[in-house]
Amino acid sequence: MNSIYSVGQVNTYIRTMFDQDFMLNKIYIKGEVSNCKYHTSGHIYFSLKDESGSISCVMFAGQRKGLGFAMKNGDKVVAGGSVSVYERDGKYQLYAREITLEGAGLLYERFLALKKELEEMGMFAPEYKQSIPVWAKTVGVVTAPTGAAIQDIRTVAGRRNPYVQLILYPALVQGEGAKESIVRGIEALDAYGVDVIIVGRGGGSIEDLWAFNEEEVARAIFNCHTPIISAVGHETDTTIADFAADLRAPTPSAAAELAVADIRVLLNQLLGARQRLSRAMENHVFGLRQKVEQYESKLKYLSPARQVQEKRTRLMQIEDRLCSAMENRIFAARQQLGIYIERMKGLSPLDKLNQGFSYVENKEAHAVTSISQVEEGEMLNIQVTDGKIVAKVLNTKREERGA
Image (cartoon, rainbow, N blue to C red; front, side):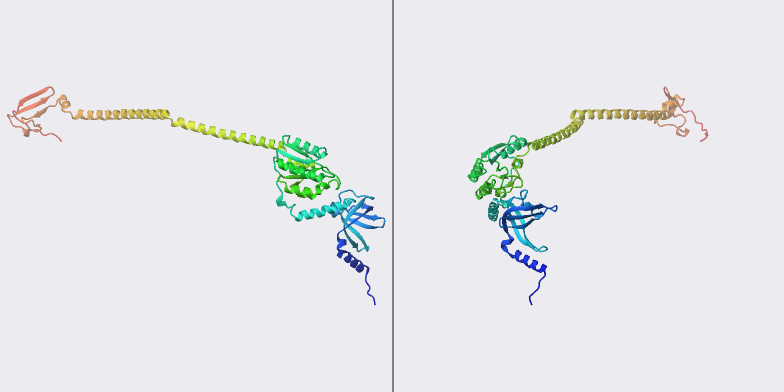
């Protein structure tokens, strides 16, 4: 009995066969677009047809970056992706990852092949990238002399810094001899010694931009000693030159923005620095003035003249205190002397004599204070106020006196 399979099993088997086919996993199909529909989810559903048939196609929203133009019915395109089976409906379709207009398909394949080759050689490695100088004085430009690119670069550079010198190498950027002209321009400006080089042109189709996808141009950029900014086409255009350059700019105007620093920013920075320096100097001078005033005040206080004056004043104060102390001491001594004088007056023999008393002494000049010290007939000297009386003892008489 023959094996019986479900519809899902058959569709799954067929899808597996498609997925295992190497050719169908990466295939490019050219044809005319029909039944093109942009879904609200972001997916694009369309068909590719030619005189012999058609194939259903879908480009999911996540792959839309592989579409560089607004696709519409009637466009002749080359769609790259994989062919697989949608199991629910049991039909095969192309799952597109990139779509280019017909004529650009073969060039795009060449572009991818060369990009892969040069990338494997390390020409796009970040360690070989040179930094763009912040304050470039001379900017070399390799582009057409009459195109919009050079006008945009001049406008932006003049606005940002009119003192920057632009040196143009008028090159062919399209058609026969373009790649050789671009290479000569890069080498000439590198030998001239500019600070940075802008290589680019305005937008166009892949055929128009193809000179910047040539290996010779990529090698010239890689071997250049001067930093290079690539500015080819519009923001959505990408060339081999963009990968080989030290920096990619989405447009020529943006390249000028990257190559020429805005002098207004520098002037504002200088103004801010000047203001900060002025404030710092004022604060420093103010601090020094305060220190000078402190030193001046201290010098005045410690000056020899002030020291002499202060010592003199101190000496005068000490002299006044000394004089006052001496006067007080003399006054106190005088008072004490007066007391002693008064006391001495009470003890003075002369005062006693003036009061009517006398002083009696014998011939040996001894004071006679008792009758027992004399004998009758003995001569005595009697001292009175105004002189001495010589007397002779006739007799003595004892008298009892109270104590």
